Length: 237
Image (cartoon, rainbow, N blue to C red; front, side, top):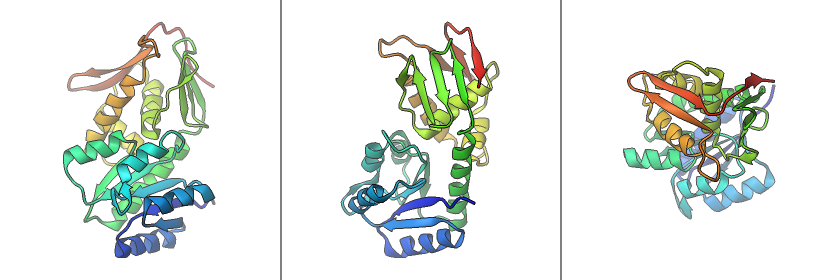
């Protein structure tokens, strides 16, 4: 059985030690660091599968660090922080975070969320899907999507939402369904994160010349569906 590697970036010693102990007791390999500098050096030694990231760190902002790594890092990033304002949550998600937990917290919920993100990461590595005559191309193995041959640079949850909407092409998918499928959490929880990711994803469904190949259309009080333009093929390989 594969042992997942988690990078735990937390400057509060007691919280870091407790989280590390709990994660290691469940079979995870944990690299615990207290600064962004240490996190960067850890990346040089080996890329983790998932990152648990505080925001207020001694040498900088976890949000800025998330933006920094997102061009290349495809794994989940879970913010764990005392910053609980709605605007701060939105900022973290828009920076590339996949999830956001506030302190104080229950460690069992933290572990459940980590498990859910890792399960979803594996699920979306299964196949290749194409749409819009091959102009929209999703590669599950690499977790990358291409629009007219250009890497869309999707964050992991953006990729998974697009994948699911393509998989469910022709039907309306509710925000609750997307939350449960992508985050593997009860859809009655806070689903603002779905709205933020869809807003970001819609901006990326255009070519560089501004022509829209696809769109995520909101159906009032119902949910979302994927609209493809000049579409003559949807298939999985």
